[in-house]
Length: 155
Image (cartoon, rainbow, N blue to C red; front, side, top):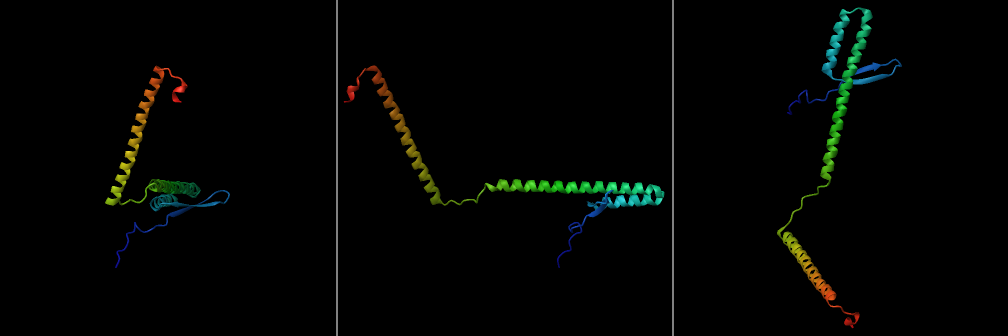
């Protein structure tokens, strides 16, 4: 038999406070249970003590405090949702650029090494050729300056 879940794990329906304004519009707002019970208890105790004309102000005060509590609860829940969404979006965007891990075999590693060595050899040959040509061109320019020759030399 499965263990019975703790009461804190069970979902709870938040208490609602109903507010009706002068135009007759009604709003249902959630209130946490503990604070709503405390507010209701205090107001009930004051109802028993106070005269009838002052009870209207007490009911207004009760609605006001319950509304404040409901607003606080709602804003806290919205803030937590926004933070959670932002966290999830950052998590997704950071994981987007990572692919699966690759597995290289010894043959793959050797093939990559030989490709890299071949590429480096080609680059080295090209670099040496450029240096040699730079030397030949420099020599040709200095000879051309020292010895005045006409264009008929190349015929």
